[in-house]
Image 1 (cartoon, one colour):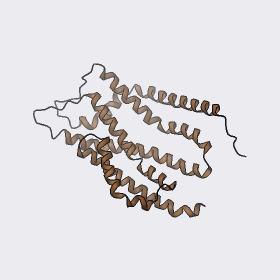
Image 2: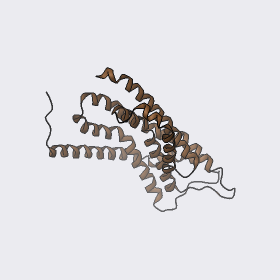
Image 3: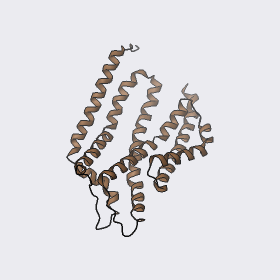
Image 4: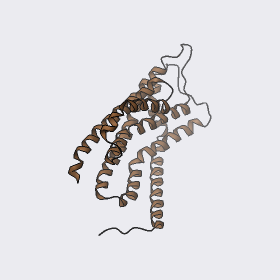
Amino acid sequence: MTDQPLPLVQHLIELRDRLLRMLLAVLVVFLSLFYFANDIYTFVAAPLEKFLPPNASMIATDVTSPFFTPFKLTLFAAVVVAIPYLLYQLWGFVAPALYKHEKRFALPLLCASVSLFYAGMAFAYYVVFPLVFGFFTSVGPENVTVMTDISLYLNFVLKLFFAFGMAFQIPVATVLLISMGIASSESLASKRPYIVVTCFIIGMLLTPPDIISQSLLAVPMWLLFESGVLVGRVIERNRPDET
């Protein structure tokens, strides 16, 4: 028995309800984490504090920064933690319009996208931050003490978190292009030189203006593109069996 199409008003009502659930989920997670806001900031600041001189510390140049900076970070953390539930609500809204084979394909892709976003953030924290902060704190003049503002530091790391989380979506985008027939694995592979240049341009635009962080974003993007092409070749080989 096929599902009857719903009127537009019912679709809008369902969308409103799901958006409210998403906002409520973020609020619940935020309230659960807010007590630990300072601890969360301490955890995020650890990669930089490890390289600060013994007589240096992070500072707050704005009187409201000690409150609003951990607040902002906790809100960001709440959204990140709630991402699986947020995407589940979006999936529940979109899924009825998909065919069975589309659902079988889209659900693993959605799970892969979430996992890769988390992996990108983890890569930034455990690999990129120590290298970048170690470099910057070691090349400054000897008579300059590094004392980073907590708000500016947060803006810096959030930008990198988002940049690496989105960059790790490249395999998903590549697989989508190949599976939808927009491009083939061979055509994408033939554009490899342009892809590499584009990766470094994106790295230049999304990261601070230094060659280290740019390369640390561009090189993984290129490798992720190659992995997406490999998965795309597997999909192309199995495509006749799916008909």
